[in-house]
Image (cartoon, rainbow, N blue to C red; front, side):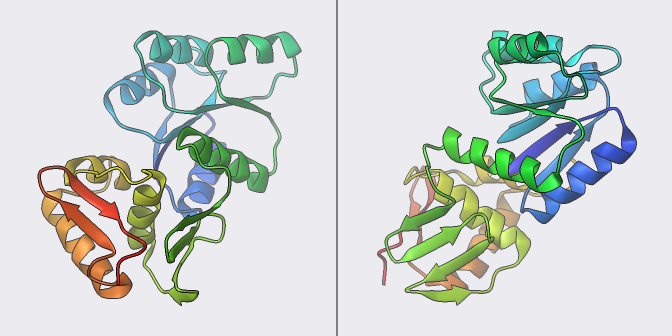
Length: 221
């Protein structure tokens, strides 16, 4: 899963980015509204954490531009201001959730994960796909009740496929959602990652639908 943190306070941005990274997200950071709007418009993010008080272009204007342009990714608004009318305006502009500053990082992570689940139509952090179980809160994967040790990148791939709900996902789409701007990932890297995962999960549990991409098959032998 890939997240964008939009925050002009360097210490807050760093703390949130580190927390999301530890929670299994690939994270990019934007520090002003113009950069945030551009990134959100051209990149594929699974969730965005958006501060309202930004230089160059305020957060509400950024959000309105995204929604007017048809961008539907979940957005969690952050604000130090306690004006309830601002919260209403943010929700009506297209925000999916709102968190006031200061906040507990554990709450932010929980809310972000909930937004990603909701966007994928998942009600629980425990996603069961046949004999394979992905626990997005604990960041664990098990097959037939036996835990499978995965690297952070391997877990991110399984997590993304689990949230795709049986849809075949191309290597190009996977790369867009697994890697941040500062990371490098192409279709060859994805194919190598899938090969490693098949050795750990079972060769058939990541199926290939020719011409479409990869999907999880939890009932495979």
